[in-house]
Image (cartoon, rainbow, N blue to C red):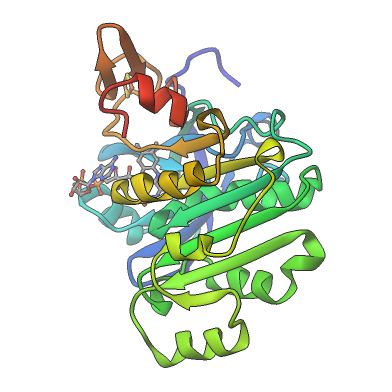
Length: 291
Ligand SMILES: Cc1cc2nc3c(=O)[nH]c(=O)nc-3n(C[C@H](O)[C@H](O)[C@H](O)COP(=O)(O)OP(=O)(O)OC[C@H]3O[C@@H](n4cnc5c(N)ncnc54)[C@H](O)[C@@H]3O)c2cc1C
Ligand code: FES
């Protein structure tokens, strides 16, 4: 890869899949096979998508580094640029720069249990962790606690249902909470009464205990979710250093140059793009405005 951190590489859109009415999954491949081979990333890192002549925006990588030859981005239609990319089709070319950010410390967590707590679009970066952990087989057990608004909003629904059915054979237990009742949710709940419930993601902690010396929690979701999920984890005596969160801030350069994403005060400043977007709860306690 180039020494220039702003270098953008062309990638072809191989597939566009509707995940929900607001989110699409883009599968990409770099035009230059050498770039594709050298493009290494860890779960939790993000890229900057460059739509030529139009603008740039940051997006988490939602595929796992264990799945070679392509890159996947789950993109919610939010405003000007994401609306534009939602109109793009298979075969179109976009620019990609990165990967940026620290990502999750997957090596440090090897041999431990992982509790992934996802809310809404937070499922996107955690999907990369989920499949990395399953594919690598380097983790004791993986829990995915996923809170969604309604059945239609479940991201990667086929994968989630597959893991509800067959996850235990892959050392993975999935639990799902939904807020809006619908026949599909009731059907799911009947099939998996111990793992699917009406409620919010924190309801999925009910009855769960874990070995705090051998467990890490990884959280991603809307800002309001963090406080309540962290409370559940602290109540179970998980140490703040074992709680990892991935955060979003408005970003521009993605590499610690423009200052757009700075949080904290003069005694503890963090660049979310460079020092994060993954932080421990310890970091949050010592940095004002992080969560
Ligand atoms: C590290 C990182 C990873 C991200 N990963 C994903 C991802 O995997 N999938 C995804 O769909 N989006 C992700 N986002 C958010 C995404 O970057 C924004 O939705 C996008 O930049 C909006 O651009 P736009 O021109 O379409 O919207 P704009 O016209 O710029 O804004 C439209 C709306 O989106 C809100 N918005 C814009 N940027 C952000 C942001 N950074 N965080 C929260 N709200 C924002 C604005 O407040 C506004 O309400 C990520 C952001 C960061 C910083
Ligand atoms: S986005 Fe420019 S410093 Fe973080």
